[in-house]
Image (cartoon, rainbow, N blue to C red; front, side, top):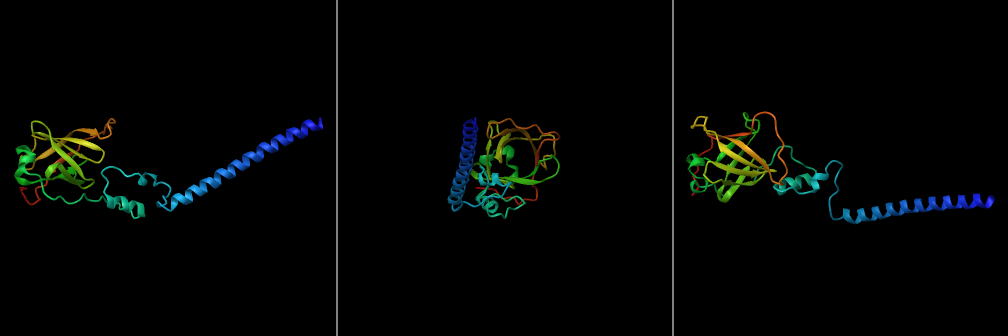
Length: 200
C-alpha cells in the first residue's frame, strides 16, 4: 500500500512540475518575442488595436497621428484638388455653371461636411479621398468614399437655383449588406457660396 500511495504522489508531483515548467517556458517565449517585435513597431494601448490596421481611404497624416497618440478628433481633409472636373466629365446635368462643391447633409437637413468633384474622377471630401463616376444617362453618379459607394440622384422637386441631390442607394465597398438607417436619407446641396471656377 505505501508504494501505491508513493507512486500516485510522485505521478501528481511530476505532472504538476511539468505544467509549471510549460507555463514558465511559454511566458519566457512570449516575453522574448515581444521584445524583438517591439523594437520595430510602436506599442499600442488597450482599445487602439484597430489603429494598427490601415484602412483604405485613410490619409497618411491621420494614420501617423493615431500611431503617435496625437489623434485628431475633428476630421482631416482630403488632399487639395489639382483641378476640378470639367463640364465634359460631369455632363450638363451636374455642371451647374462650374460649381463642384456640394454640402453633405447626413441627416437630410443640416450640413455636416462637403464633397467636391475633381478631374479624372477624383473626389475630395471632408472625411476621406474618394472617386466618382457618371452613370449611363448622365442623371445619376456614384460617389465612393469611406466604406460606401453612394448612388446620387438629382432631386427635381427642389428649386433649380439651389440644386440638391439625394442618396438613392448605398452599396458597401466590401460587398456586405448596407445597414438600414431609420429617418431621412442623406442629401447634398450645391454650395452656392463657392466661387465659380470652370475647369479646362
